[in-house]
Amino acid sequence: MTQADFEVWKEAGPGTWRPHRPRIIIVEKGDVLLMPPGVAIIHAPLTLETCVMEGSMIWDRQRLVDIRRNCMWIAQNESVTNEPRLGDLDNVLATAIEDEARRGDSAGR
Image (cartoon, rainbow, N blue to C red; front, side):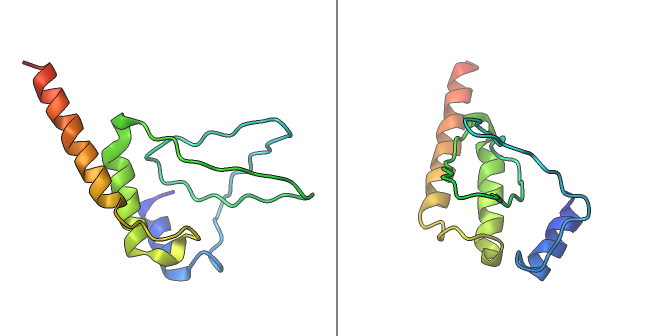
């Protein structure tokens, strides 16, 4: 999605916005779908039968800045998610980014 798409989505809200060209990914029983960390991806799981789905977040330290940027955008545009508020997550991410930068600085010496 482009930045313009995100702005339209933010204004319309997730209940009324429709993508111009959605991508469909079919996941069958036993499959695992991994979405890359730090990439803003709008997703809407749909099942035709009763099933169990599980989700979690796997973050890569190389993408912490992108992850933080996306989390902050969501915090400023709460209508775009059905997830609870971020709470202290921004502070945790900021600390992790600072720690990672310090590690990088000391490794380069």
